[in-house]
Length: 508
Ligand SMILES: Cc1cc2nc3c(=O)[nH]c(=O)nc-3n(C[C@H](O)[C@H](O)[C@H](O)COP(=O)(O)OP(=O)(O)OC[C@H]3O[C@@H](n4cnc5c(N)ncnc54)[C@H](O)[C@@H]3O)c2cc1C
Image (cartoon, rainbow, N blue to C red; front, side, top):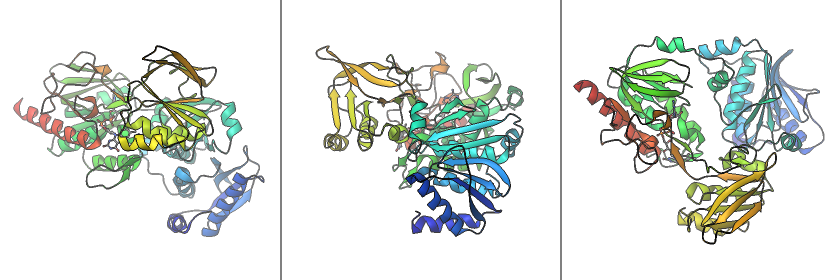
């Protein structure tokens, strides 16, 4: 079941176990059951701390990771290999007694939960966003006996997934009702449960010299450059890491031949936390007001004050803006082919967008689904020629150019798409079950209103010091009018904005 290299790595992790574990298995005669049995027996053969028992669990096939005579509430329904293998290792270590790497404040919040919370997370083994959610909910289960969590592999429980119309992973249910869809950190889960930090804690914060808004590549770089000047620096963000969280392979950070988004975010966080930077995560900024100081208002009503501000709020996926898009979001309308592609196995899908991300998605999906239709608004695809050549070599792809998507149709889930030929005006409807939208990004600057100068498409206009049209307010990264949007460019502009802000502070 496990190859030699993985077994060697696993053996090192199993050495770290601090107590005994019982894997309780509910298995039948099907292939997944047999694979689960092979996996748990292999684990037991590698550590004397692990024993295997049979049990009648809610789902078959599945297995629980428990302590002897004590249920932890962690269940894996399916074989946790692929991206979920780490979730299994973490669960083994944490259930055995190794403390999860979570701040004490968060542990206290989790342990204070009195309600009975039963979480179920539907995943696919190829989803790189799913393990974060699975691991966060497993940690919550380990820390609080009122909380249970089951990971459910959609491929092993197809009937259940179809009955619930789940077309995006990770999808989390709480006590039988949909709780969330998409990657979430433990802090975000707690905030969604209504357990978080209240406004009063922030209102008491001292004035910052530099307050960075956004903790993506640009914001982290700006904060590190600022704090290294010895000035009081803070960083406030909705989601630490920004877009890089959603990136799989990264091969163009100069000096790092290859990495992956979540790994890169972890190293950004480690670097930021190495300095006395006040990191305020999972908080959304809603307004900026320039008074004697600059006042930043958070969604929870708190006001943070700073002498200078660096806006590094990045960008988000652009919506196509047609009827059906919002109604069928996560019910056939998707934005992440890596995550949701496997749920469309054997089905017909469309990809809207003929740029690099759209064509990469179409190539990726063509290996899983029955047929892919690519819709490009312009008369020609914009993707690199090498990607186009690969696309046109695939037998199950149709490319429609110079077409405009008019509507995504469906009942409970997507059943088709209507487009208009821009040359002839002719309208056509195609039957399909999924639509992947990959038409670029929009800057996260709407919340700024018209307080400063922006371009026609909402990008913040900056000068060569990263300064905006408000004195003391700087900007960096994908939210600005920089010609190119890349990690290394965001980091460079973050450094520029921080040096610009420092220069402003010593002159004013
Ligand atoms: C799928 C994908 C693959 C990519 N691959 C690559 C690649 O291989 N190489 C490469 O160089 N680039 C790649 N890019 C582009 C690269 O990720 C971006 O250019 C870069 O991450 C932008 O960084 P940023 O800090 O400007 O913005 P973001 O990463 O978008 O970060 C914005 C930050 O601001 C926060 N924020 C937004 N609004 C608010 C608010 N109102 N209040 C508080 N916080 C807020 C967000 O939570 C986040 O922390 C890719 C992008 C995507 C989407």
